[in-house]
Image (cartoon, rainbow, N blue to C red; front, side, top):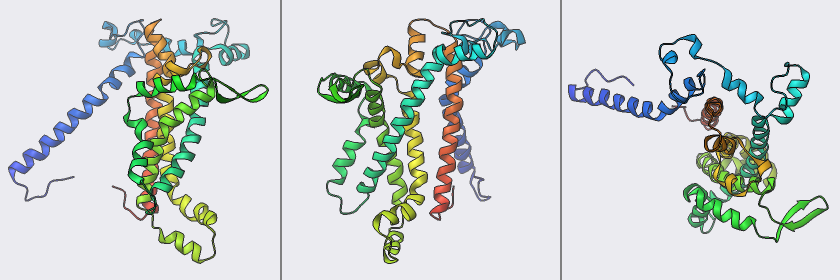
Length: 316
């Protein structure tokens, strides 16, 4: 925003100082990203900038670590890249398997989070809701409680033998630890607070007279919700779902506690790579995750602007 013509020298000094401070804070926050991205193209197996990279020598840069994401774990990584190679890639490549797990777990956890979080937000925004503040505090507590505490509690809870689970014979009783259902429920619990917050913020600007108007025209509560209220709060629901998906996609502590060996996710595999077999391929994965995160944040911002337009608010 431009300064007014009548601004004093002191006001101008503060304005430009403020912009400089904001720029330094932004640089501090994105500095790790700015370092990781070029390092992922390092031709050498190092986590530092080589002399060739510093001098911008093309031979110092390579896509070898991105190629390693494709071939790592394959049975025949050096085979010609024909149909058999890509079938081997899809069935055996380590990073493909962990990506499958992350996507499956993230999608189902997001569906559960979006459904339960939206219902909770609808209830918490009603003026006649009793004990609203204590219930809200409990529901958003997974955002506040350290994840190590939540993961420890989930591990002991999931280790109980009486938990109902799906088996080959049908519904039975056993342990949720080491099952996909257990990981999905854990990630859903971590994602619900984000949905509650975003949907509640959307509902705060919702005109309840629209629901009453729909009821006066003969619409029952279900029709009024799906035809009037839901389309207007949908941007908040989708935004919360994207945050829940990102939380699931990035979560590693709960997976360390409750996942089995064949249920590794991308963050868990990155953890393994750091502790067991250090490879700059981790930097390539981090770069791809940064790109995905930026795309998701862009979608969230577009949804926010759409929600403001639907509510008659001018986007800032």
